Image 1 (spheres, rainbow, N blue to C red):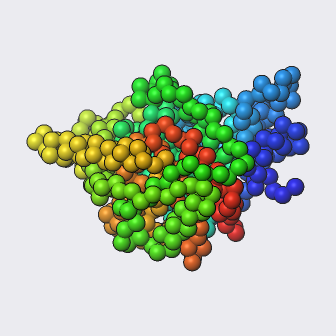
Image 2 (cartoon, protein in one colour):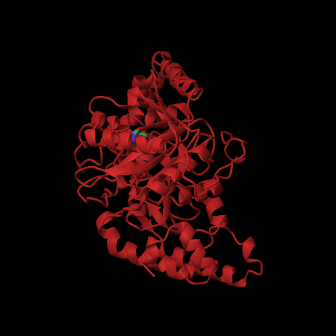
Image 3 (cartoon, protein in one colour):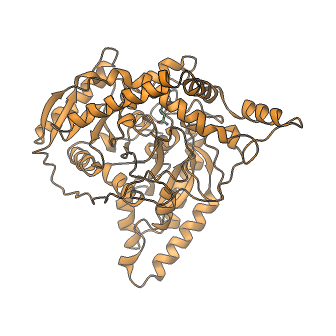
Length: 489
Ligand code: GLN
């Protein structure tokens, strides 16, 4: 058999249930590969081999003892990596920040808990931009993750560690979070499949808050089917998150028939702008033609308020972040440094605990929320956000999905945007509007540029129609090979 780390989750489950492999063997294969390759990729912030082996052993025993094999948990013995923004009980959770360097949450995020109940084995926590603020993992307080396709390039961010881990086969799948593009952009830069669910579809309980009206928990995997498998387990209402919705999660029909007839694909003119790397545009247009050849109809559409999304996002996200990050006061948890008085406790803990991008956002957000400016900035941004959301609602009266590039470029060089926050913010110009509207989106690989760096397309659906995105992505992947490409490591 080829190496165990090349198996998709579905393939691994077949082998596990036939008794041809054990979870211990599968987990060991990943642990060995991580030990060998992660020193150069640096996808993991915390590596948990002991926990993984313990969980794998328990999974094997459970499988062996079960009388009714059909009643076993659906992901029993499958390894998983988790972005360090999601709490796992008693496991260090830094959120990429010094301020949480020694934080051990006393509880697990609902999404993680549901997957643990389904039988997953935790390989470790993956690297990320501090508090999920960034597009490259360069804002991690610990180190930068390297893109497995080219180690001099960023893997994208903020969930760069998760995306790099999946494409480098250091995990079969990984969890991430997406507030403005943090699942889709790294998925695109690393050439893997990633879903950002509808806001309210997956519980945010145990997800360290960044912008609470934008934050979502997402999944990276080798293909749409693997991603859907995890997503269906994570999704659904949770009493611990009042914004999670009681809307049934439809099971996706993954028929082997790549027929897209009846599907209307919208192509918004505002997403094919000057400045987009020509090879990116070409690959996206080719993928859209491919969908057309599979029966879909293609329609030019307009999302007229798109140009406001970037400034609106960079008011709303920092405003919410400044409020959310107020809790790191050096008293209850996280870094605590003081010179014997309260003011120095706040100043030293926050001053030394937060990195410069986080401080920039806290200052921007605090300003936007301050008395006298609130209406002009935050209030106004919320009004424009409604217009952006309405653009999508109107578009979805005429089309089923919308296809756009994920990012204007392929993976940029490490250090290329480090001193230019605006250039970094522009990398998310196509992903931010989707979080403002709250709709779901999937990123899938559709090609490579001349430097052999992956290109991703973004398919957007109307609220709670992730099933349609999975179906189309799967149909595309049945007829193409891009998602099967892996870097030489
Ligand atoms: N890059 C965007 C930001 O820095 C989005 C990050 C995210 O989705 N968490 O805010």
